[in-house]
Image (cartoon, rainbow, N blue to C red):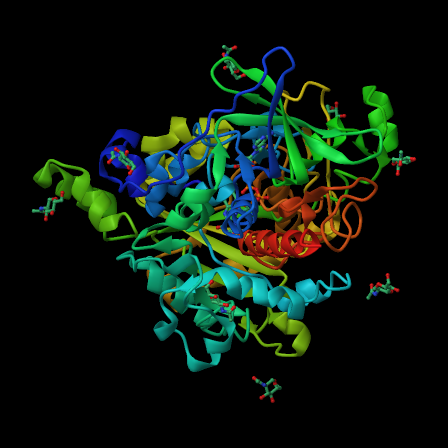
Length: 612
Ligand SMILES: Cc1cc2nc3c(=O)[nH]c(=O)nc-3n(C[C@H](O)[C@H](O)[C@H](O)COP(=O)(O)OP(=O)(O)OC[C@H]3O[C@@H](n4cnc5c(N)ncnc54)[C@H](O)[C@@H]3O)c2cc1C
Ligand SMILES: *[C@@H]1O[C@H](CO)[C@@H](O)[C@H](O)[C@H]1NC(C)=O
Ligand SMILES: *[C@@H]1O[C@H](CO)[C@@H](O)[C@H](O)[C@H]1NC(C)=O
Ligand SMILES: *[C@@H]1O[C@H](CO)[C@@H](O)[C@H](O)[C@H]1NC(C)=O
Ligand SMILES: *[C@@H]1O[C@H](CO)[C@@H](O)[C@H](O)[C@H]1NC(C)=O
Ligand SMILES: *[C@@H]1O[C@H](CO)[C@@H](O)[C@H](O)[C@H]1NC(C)=O
Ligand SMILES: *[C@@H]1O[C@H](CO)[C@@H](O)[C@H](O)[C@H]1NC(C)=O
Ligand SMILES: *[C@@H]1O[C@H](CO)[C@@H](O)[C@H](O)[C@H]1NC(C)=O
Ligand SMILES: *[C@@H]1O[C@H](CO)[C@@H](O)[C@H](O)[C@H]1NC(C)=O
């Protein structure tokens, strides 16, 4: 998490701008209206938000010949975002909403104001333009467990396959073939192989703990250590902006209103949705836009509930408190689930000094161009991911031993990052601002990193028991919502993290790690017992300090609770939701794949339901 890749150390945004290729996206439309009446145009469909779900919904409708307006608060992505290795530089940038959240005092304690951060992409492609590009669908059991008619894995699988354009099927075993499609619009491929020696060392380490080497987390099994596939194509990011909106056939047909912010949904006295209100253009004019068929909210799990509540759809007591007339009393913003993440740091002696190597190359070539061109697609060790059910791990034998069917359901996912010697010191002030970490933690990491390389291992709780809420902070649509993630409020999540960290501790004692003099850093944290006195208590306390989010929030306008099985908002007509908030539960893995599939599926619903 903390570690910034070489590229973000050396490559300023300007360098990347000059270098990155020019993916052509649809031009923006200027919306006009009768200024006095504030009435704007009418479309058949209006889709709010051009992210993981909104882009596929709008593109599919447009391709089917419908008149569609896609409304997006942001604009075109900054060219840096095309370069996979620059992903960390997008965090906290102009393309990131970087919402503040409300502290629960038991998580994120080493962050400023003891509050977690909530990153979300603000541009075409939404968070698929700023995310870590890991292509993971989750476990098929997660979909069956939704227990909603028509939403089992059997029903969802065709939608995952519909958009997948896997370029590297030949690198997967034959058993993987039925699980993939090679011709879908979202072209994906393995991240370019990095030269980072820790790439293979990490895999060796996990193998020494009897983690199977899993060739395909989206195939037969999820368990083990894997090199995962990325949302990249020709070594550049494959966002939904590129995969859907950049297509020539879509560009010809779809209208996209950029820098246009939806402020509410227009619903008439008969509970029929008529359109939306937006603020658009350089003068921030407010316009009413009309949809003759349907409005689709795809503004993400944090903003869609805000728009619903502003429009009178939400928990009655909260709406009353905010002075908003209640149209439909629904549990909007409740049961928000997200993958909490805790990072630990392993110091390793590293003979190879990548940073120095790159600096030398840069000096010789006098141009940072070569670095971007040769390393732009590689992403260090971030494509090494492992999945495990920690209850199937034998801590005495130091082995993953269980192989029952329950052990096929992972409880923990690990991410990895490598920081070359000296990197944290160089980037300290920026890390502090962007990541919001307090001085004491930054200073300790920076001190160690002066002498050692640091491998960050992040433990993710895949099925957290804790849940949070989204509420209105204000009736002003320009104010961000009140986000209360409430990570680690259930102690069982902390126990899962501690088991995860214990496995990482044993990873550092495997032969490959020992040979590199590896050891797990025990940061001194204010308010935590010393690790030598009570190591279990120390790691529990540590987890509550070094908590981060994986930015996978779901459930805030969920299927079954707020939406019917065709993603229609209950109690009003012609209003649907497709985004991460519509997922009633977290998949065991990263969320974008499921959210894109949801967008594909909603397009089918709309086209089916509106034919008659
Ligand atoms: C830093 C980060 C890393 C991640 N890493 C991964 C990963 O490696 N793999 C993975 O699968 N998932 C990852 N995720 C999660 C994944 O990207 C999200 O789950 C997914 O993008 C959510 O899709 P969405 O459609 O709900 O919202 P988004 O993709 O966020 O799209 C919402 C869109 O709505 C727009 N919008 C918001 N409010 C308004 C408004 N009022 N009016 C108009 N437009 C509006 C936003 O600007 C945005 O474009 C990551 C997320 C983040 C933030
Ligand atoms: C990018 O492409 C667009 C449309 O094809 C073109 O107008 C623009 O000049 C290009 N920009 C660059 C930097 O090549
Ligand atoms: C967290 O602590 C602050 C300061 O003591 C307090 O105001 C706030 O209500 C607490 N929050 C929760 C969720 O307990
Ligand atoms: C699934 O839903 C049905 C109907 O709502 C309910 O009766 C049943 O108990 C649920 N099953 C599980 C495993 O939750
Ligand atoms: C694979 O993708 C293509 C292109 O989108 C699509 O036509 C085809 O139906 C997909 N295959 C499967 C099995 O879904
Ligand atoms: C609108 O929906 C609300 C909540 O479902 C209901 O109480 C009200 O009667 C509806 N109004 C009309 C005109 O249907
Ligand atoms: C329009 O709104 C944006 C964002 O709130 C603000 O930065 C800008 O100054 C506003 N422009 C005008 C002309 O009011
Ligand atoms: C210098 O960088 C360019 C790309 O900008 C590359 O083609 C060339 O091979 C590099 N030269 C050396 C000596 O590395
Ligand atoms: C699972 O474990 C049992 C008992 O240890 C062993 O006999 C069996 O071969 C294992 N099966 C697999 C698929 O590894």
